Length: 157
Image (cartoon, rainbow, N blue to C red):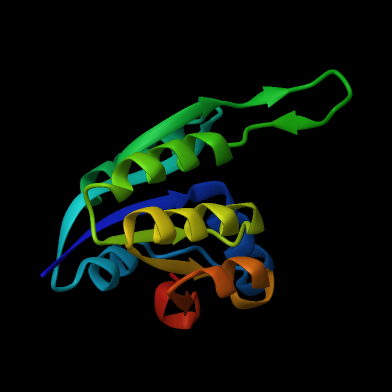
């Protein structure tokens, strides 16, 4: 069995599945599919903390599934824009995990991660898998992955 490390960009997955399907991502089904016949080395879900009770319940569900939930505070700027980006945190964790795993699995459509996947493949000879909503997943990210798994009806609630 191969060793796998999972990294989920929760905000990206939430907004892309809502935008395209108007439905939520099924994290239980995702976990079953992504970890089948594999040994989980690490599993992280990166989210923004707004202090909302419903969100805290969701985060507890993720923990119950097996994810370590990493939170950043939601920051509302004076100009009305908001900040809450996990790109650097995800990158650091992926780079660290790549030395101890055989498969890096990233659930995100964010094209900023294409160079990260290329680098871990080159440096650590790991396989990389990307789960993302087809029309909202960067082609650069899809092309940089060893394997792309589109998020479709079977992974939605």
